[in-house]
Amino acid sequence: MALNAVERVAEQVPADDFQALEEKIYRTIERYKAAREAQAAAERDAQRLRQQLDERNEELATLRREAVQLKKEREEIRGRVEKMLVQIESIAEAS
Image 1 (spheres, rainbow, N blue to C red):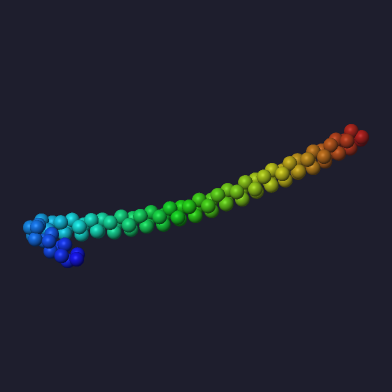
Image 2 (image 1 turned 120 degrees about the horizontal axis):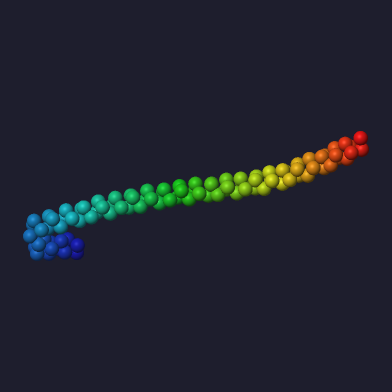
């Protein structure tokens, strides 16, 4: 069936026109292949970037937790130092 269609087209279209059409089809096929390869590369890059973003988000969350913990520790130490200073002042006043 397809062969009959090609034969009918060949009879209706001069050889030079048919050859030009054939070349256009092959160029289109090559462009399509190149576009698919480019799309696959872009999808791989997007996946890699998503993974990097997830890793950075995890790292950021960890750093935020650490910062909160360090602030708590700093406040605790500040309170202890103030308590010691009060005791030192009371000893100094008693002397």
